[in-house]
Every structure is written in C-alpha cells, then in structure tokens.
Length: 75
Ligand SMILES: [Zn+2]
Image 1 (cartoon, rainbow, N blue to C red):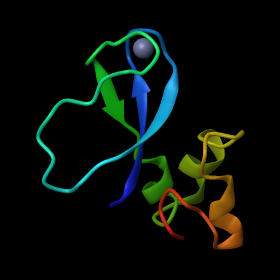
Image 2 (image 1 turned 90 degrees about the vertical axis):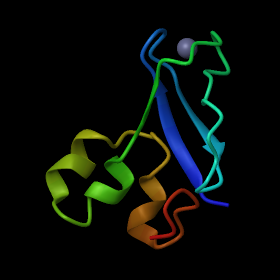
Image 3 (image 1 turned 45 degrees about the vertical axis):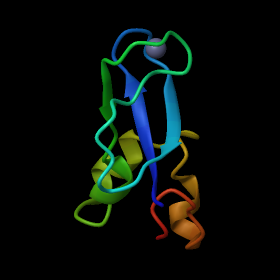
Image 4 (image 1 turned 60 degrees about the horizontal axis):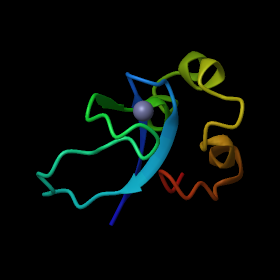
C-alpha cells in the first residue's frame, strides 16, 4: 500500500497516510479532523523538474528522495 502525503487545508498541517489505490473513504486530518485535505504531489513532481522539489523541501518527508530511500515515493 503506497504512502501518500497530505496537507490539511484547514489547519495547514501535513501528514502521511497509507492508502490503497482503490480506497474511496475520505482522508481526514489527524490533527483537526477536517476532510479538506489535499494530496501532495511534490514527491512525484521532482522527477519532471527540480524547482518543485526545492520549494517543497525542508523536511516534508521527501528528503530521502535524493538518497534513493524515500519511503514516500520509493525514489
Ligand atoms: Zn487539520
């Protein structure tokens, strides 16, 4: 099951959640319970261009991408 990164639009916190590809239940923020969350794509976008990765860096969970050991995207 892939691990996805999400950002809560209500409280701004980021969190990771294991989600099946065919999961249909809404993702909820573990901090405030809001369902207004957005899936982060920065981890995948960096393969298309480095600028996105740089702006999304800083310990957001994809720092391991450079070492090939990212548990989020497997890169
Ligand atoms: Zn929240």
